[in-house]
Amino acid sequence: MIIKNSVVLVTSAGTSLGAMIALHFARLGAYVVLCDVNESTLTSAYRRCLEVTEHVEKAHVSDLSLKTVETLFSSIESKLGRAPNVLVNHWTSLPKQTLTGGTLAVNSLPSFPYWHPIYSYSAKSLQSECHRANQA
Image (cartoon, rainbow, N blue to C red):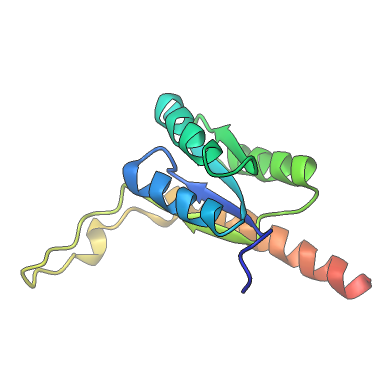
């Protein structure tokens, strides 16, 4: 996939790793959309990306509900005229894996409804993009 001119959505973009991921895609020429629940760290990451490119947007999200995710994707589509091509779901609340051979118990992972909305909406958006491409 050619990243240049793609729309890349980075979640948890206000974290150190999220900001570095966003900067990486910005340097590759993507139109980067940063989102996070922490507005101050989101703004900091946004300013760092602006030093690389003017093709960056930020979106503060107050929660991870399906309604919030739908609103996020709708605003991206309205502003940019298309849905994100790439979703980097930098999810910081997953348990850490050990380097000493320990394993995670399956029941220690967060439940499906917690992360379902963004994937559900991404799939629906991708499906509509494919349908539009086939109509053309």
